Image (cartoon, rainbow, N blue to C red; front, side, top):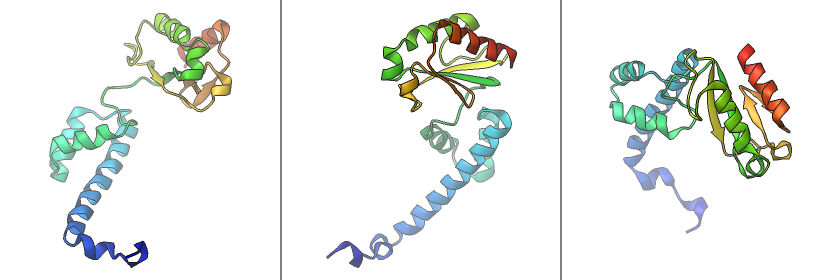
Length: 161
Ligand code: FES
């Protein structure tokens, strides 16, 4: 039998209904997460609790679905997000020094947010601009070819936002 002859719907029978129900739930959840995160900048615990009750989906499933996706956050994030690339090209060209300097300047470690909520500091594996290494992103903006002077400029840019 070749692939074209397979009737997938017939083969999976009732499983199809179960799958489509699960897919619907997942689709609703993801849409809800996007709206919640747009409003709060992260997924607050009390809002996820309410969502769980409203949709009659166990809280564990709500969390498990949200945590599957890297772009949903469970902790408040700063108004600005600085992301230091620590991928191979950036690592080789001094990413750890860049990270250290930004950590020292803002008094936070990677993964933390300043107390005034001005900035969250993160790291990433590669942002796809290896030719500009070392690279950081400030919100949507990519800043590459970093040297100590440019790192100071990035720090000033964030402080002024
Ligand atoms: S490793 Fe940093 S941009 Fe690719």
